[in-house]
Image 1 (cartoon, rainbow, N blue to C red):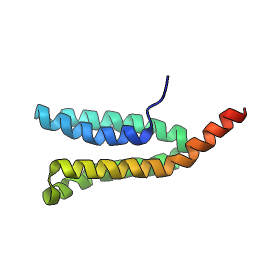
Image 2 (image 1 turned 180 degrees about the horizontal axis):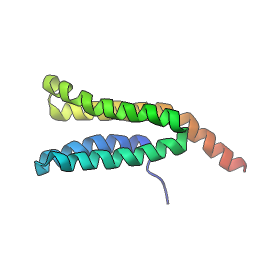
Image 3 (image 1 turned 120 degrees about the vertical axis):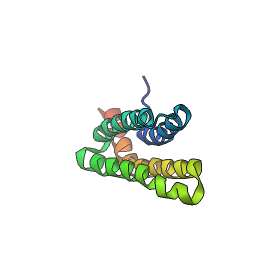
Image 4 (image 1 turned 60 degrees about the vertical axis):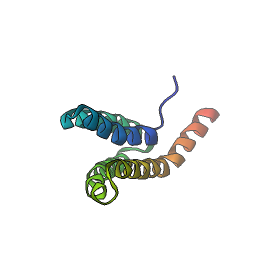
Length: 110
């Protein structure tokens, strides 16, 4: 079964969490989506790059969520969410790309 790339999981958690909170008018429900995707992303990051880098990416995920709030006051809610989701996806991709390539090469040789 193909895996969903961790950058997509992280971005989807930020966008999906906001979308659920907004459309259901239940912020805690959006938080459940945000946390669930975050937990899945953390698991993938640990497998891909190890604990220290996963901790850094987790901190970036939380910072993206927190940073979307003041940014939303300047550019609007959806643009802020898409901006931080894109930044998080880019950060995750940059950190994990070499590890994923390295793991694929190792499996291919083995």
